[in-house]
Structure formats: C-alpha cells, structure tokens
Image (cartoon, rainbow, N blue to C red; front, side):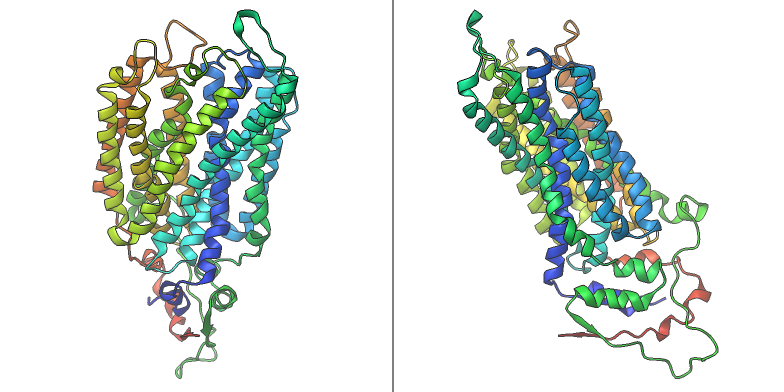
Length: 538
C-alpha cells in the first residue's frame, strides 16, 4: 500500500519551529529524569553524615537506594509504553510529568526527620513512584518525537531530546554545589564545633533541609513544561494508523505544522454505496507468532543492546562517589557539605567535558553516519578504555586508596564521551524507529525496561562484588576487585559490539511507514487511494 500522503508530508516536511518546541517540551522530561536519578549520589553522602553518625551508609542501604528508582523506572516503561499504544501517546504524557513533579516534592518532604529507618523507607517509596513517572517519559518522548519528525533529520531530533539528560546531570551537580555552598556559608555562625580530636561537625537541623531542597528543585523543570505538554496534539501517525482517522490526522498536523492541506479528492470510479475505508493497523497481537517472525529479532537486539549499555553507563555514573575517595579531600573534617560538594563537582566536570559533548556529537553525526556504525564504534572504544583503565588499575590507586586523579579522570571521561556518542543515545533512538505504529511505544518501553534491569545488575553487582571483605560497613571499593570489574565491563562492551553487528538493523533515512509493510491486509487498502492529500508549502 502506498503510504498516506499526510504521513508522507510528515517525512518530507521542512524543519520548523514546532520541531524545536517539541524537542524542548519532550526534552525537559528527560532533563528532569536525569536530574532526579543522578542527584541521589551526593544526597546519600549528606544523609550518611546526618543519620549515620558520619559512617558509610552501608552496601545494602546504598544499593537499595540506587536500585529502587531504577526498578520503578523499568515498571513505568512497561506500563506507560503499553498505555501509549492503547489510549494514545499524548493522553498519558501529562500524567507521567505529574507523577514526576509530585514524587519529587514527596522525596523532599519525606515524613520523618529523626529516625533514619523511617527517613530511608519514606525516601525509597517516593523514589519508586518517581521512577514510574520517569519510566513512562522514556517511550512516550521518543515515540512522540519520532512521529512528529521528518525522515531526513529524525535521528538528530530524537538525539536532541535525549541530550537533555546531559544538561539534567550538569544541573543536578550545579544545584547540589550551590545549595551546599549556600548552607555552609549561612550556617557558619550556628555551627556546633567539637574541638575533640580537631574534628568539626555540623548540627543536622540545617543540613536536613539542604538535601531535601536539592531533591525538590528537580520538580521545577517538569512543572514549567506541564502546560505545553498538555497542549500537544496526538501524533498524526497514531491517529491515522491506529485510530484509523486520516482526516483528523490531517487536521492535527495542520494545527502545529506550517503546511497547507487540501481536502481529499474523490475518485471518479468510487462507488457511493461503499463507504471509504481507512488504513488499519496490524491485526495480530504483541508476541504472537507473526509478531515474533516480523519483529522478534529487532526487539531482541534493541533490548539486549540497551541492557548491555546500561550495565556500563549507570554503573559508571552513579558510582563516581565510590570510585573516587572524596573523603581524602577533607581528612580532618566531617562537615556534612564537603564530601557532597566534591562528588557534585567531579560529576559536573565529567558532564561538561565528556557527557554533554558526546550527546551533541551524536546529534550532528547520527543522520550522516548512521545508528549502527555509531553504536558499534561507541561500544568498541568503551571496551578499549575499560581495558586500558582496568589492566593497570593498581597503578591508578596507591596502597592507601588514593587515586591518581588526573590520568584516571581522562580515561573515565572517555567512557562517558563514547557512551553518549555511541550506544547510550542510539539505544534510545532505534526502538522508536523499528516497530509498527501500533506497537512502537510498547516495544520501546520493553527495550528500555531491559536497560534499567541492566542498570540494576551493574550497580548492585558492582557494589557487592567490589566491597572490602573485612569491613562490612565500608563501601569503598576494593582495588583488586575494581580491576576485575572494569575488565568485566570491557567484556560487556564487546558483547554489545557483537549484538549490534549481527542483529541490529540500520534505520537512517528509513520512513516509519516502512514498518507497516505486510501489516495491512489487502481488503483494508481498497479505499486508501482516494485519500489524496496534496501538500503545498506556504
């Protein structure tokens, strides 16, 4: 069946203001996602000072704190990905944002202030709910952007949406540093200084407000875009191919795109007795035999690649505080703000120098080089860097667990650059381009959920596998075990190269309607030739 002209018009549409507006509205959700997921690292440093008497939080609590939001994210991707295909993308888009806003405030208003068990349980609950909203934002943002974009620059648009994660990570670090600096300066007059052993401590009343404020600020970007997100029309592709309403799809497109559509022109031989039929989406169900024969390999590749890259990406991002021993920066101080400030500072440096440039290299090259080549290159170079960092790791760490920061930071930065100029971005893009409209959001959610399970495996596995065996509460990694872990992560990247090479299809320059081939029965296409939509540029 030739594609509907309204959908062809979307593929051929010139770049317009609405494309950039959609990038900003959808991207602010990813911005908030990254802020909320990654600000927990310095926040846990502050919590350890306030509620754990300046002792490490402990491996069990630390791994649970990291994993709980990711578990909620995986569940949210499955639920909202499915709902995006069942009831419409934009109908549940605002709900995801609302969940993120309310749960971000909930994290800050965790109901307890004295009992640490109650504080951590309350924080875990709200972060799980936060994860549900974050998870829903992944498949919906990617699908909406892919269905609004034109064929020529679709990859760059989706990558631009995803690149907002880098700004979210940078903002979380900047906010943390600003809050720590402000509270430390403002509270100097009320510090309770204990002269014993030359150690200073901070009265917890002020610090207990600081970490809550950091978490609540994450709600502001999402709240600012809620109004515009609610005004977004349903995508023309969903309306035409799933709801079978090409006329409404044309009207929705005209609302937001600077193009002019003429009404359908009836055919000379069309019979007035036979109602005009609209194109219908696939009749078979998800995971049916026909679905697996047509799309099973694509779903496997998308899920496996996302699983593998998230093992690496989230482990490296969230464990900056463990790989770099910031306590050595202030050996005679237990000030609640110092270690959190140092963690945030290093994360900001990595984001500004490696993470954000990697995203924007992908934006520029994705529609020139292709998704598969960039993904293979990223996995391969990451594998080389992990081997280069892992083999001589004992040289980077001295006997006193003090890092050779400069050399190791360069290698560590390369991991983030080629993760984002590579599989971390492409695994977000490809599932939004591979599947039929009826299953696109669901399959993207399945792929993303597999990725978050990989993140949980990597983070929890790294924490438990690299902890000191003689110190139950010491969560600083054992040097020899970190070396082995880096070599394993290098092997994970090599596995990503193989899965990408043998199973992943290139989608550059491919119309989304190519996914609809063999999806529509011959009887359902009889009247589609009468839908003649002529596109005239203004």
